[in-house]
Length: 304
Image (tube, rainbow, N blue to C red; front, side):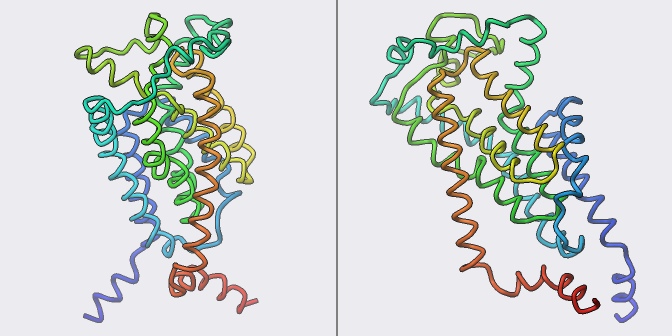
């Protein structure tokens, strides 16, 4: 038994943790069907990760970091089907007391048609890629990067400010307000070139517009990214998240008011996430867990 303990201690657990973490990130990208461009964007955002790294030993971080990333990965895999079940339920029950198509269409500049003044085939293709991946890629880039900064707090902050809080908070809007996508209301071609099995599938896909969740997710990530020190990451996320927001208008999906509402919704969600994390950290989190992370720092200070 003693020899077994010695052998276990002699193993390079940090290296095993790094290898498993890379595998987990690869699985996240595989499930999401990430293109080479997605991986390239992630790698660029990771270039300056050391600038924001927390002074925590890798082995201590992996104890909580890897399971947390695994939990996010699990819900990512099952979350899409859950979302469409909810959307179908809302469509079948038709609980929309407010119908806003005509009101939104009557507001000048609200269709976002002005965003297509610079339209061309190459930009169309780029905007489709940005929009299709933007709903989850902007969040995953931030979560994966915060993992490599060895910060549990940042991982939770990005996750809460993203889908974890936004999904339940946005559902009342989608259940009360019926607002279809711009192209559908104005009988224009779908610039995303989506195919639908039947008319019901089409109606489910285009009915939830206010507020724009593509906007709210990406803007929340933008706000949090601005708190980081690394200029490369901040520049890339501001550019990418802004492009996601612009794509919703360029592709004639969301109304300008949807986008503005999405930004306000994101701001409120980030503030709520900050509040919840502060409460949990100060009043709920056991002192033993805080001490677990502080041990390395205390040891270093003692040595000095």
